[in-house]
View 1 (tube, rainbow, N blue to C red):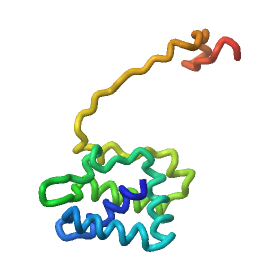
View 2 (cartoon, rainbow, N blue to C red; view 1 turned 90 degrees about the vertical axis):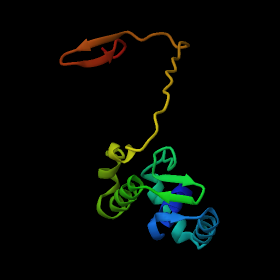
View 3 (cartoon, rainbow, N blue to C red; view 1 turned 60 degrees about the vertical axis):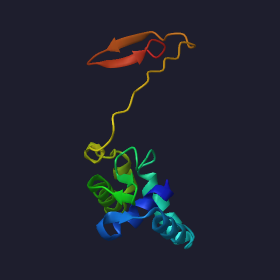
View 4 (cartoon, rainbow, N blue to C red; view 1 turned 30 degrees about the vertical axis):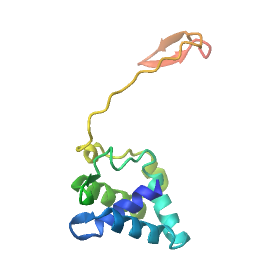
Amino acid sequence: MSFQITVLKVLAGQPEGRASVADLTRYVKVLMTSGPDWIERTNRLAARAPQLDILAEGFVRRDENGWQITEAGRRFLAWLERRVSGVSFDQESSEAVPGSFKTERKAQRLRLVVDNTRPPTAVTRIGHGDLRSSSTV
């Protein structure tokens, strides 16, 4: 989301990486309405991290004084911006967001979802670990 990238950029430019909610709202509003250049740039950045959640990832902390970018948030933003300028899209799309940025992430409960509505497909092992459907063998 380009909004979340904008929040990271605003906080990174503030003293101590911190802004009150009122200041953050004002700065984000100015940037988001500043024209198509900003929106296009943040959309390009956001496309490289489509599942971005700056709070869940631990990139931003909220408290009674406002919001503050974390060290992990600064590293992520630097990585994201470096990706835009130095690597082609084909090279970049094969790389995932490094796990080192997720060090401050809170534990999440995972859910396994099983779809039992489709009939099972017979699978045959071919050679060195290759798996193929019996319909293609």
